[in-house]
Length: 116
Image (cartoon, rainbow, N blue to C red; front, top):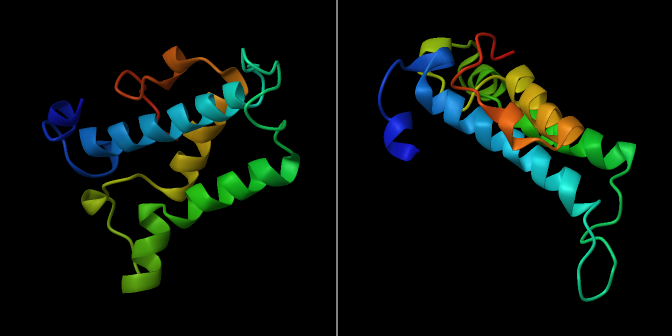
């Protein structure tokens, strides 16, 4: 996977960004199952069900590390051609896809025409 990320187009639609957005989606899938799948030994889910505030906090965290937000804070402007992780909106979108579906197959950012 990492070798694939280092090949191909760079910037906002590049493989590095697609890999990072896929990771955001997988984080959403993990959150979905961690709060619904019960541990064999106890019968209790690994996490308490996530509250709306928990989800909002996760989305805010994803947004705060978007390349657009970081570049704007540091440089006063953004340059999508230098992005390595995706925009705030993209990162929120892909976490949400994973969390709402719980389906890792929906996380294929390499086939997605629209990253968000």
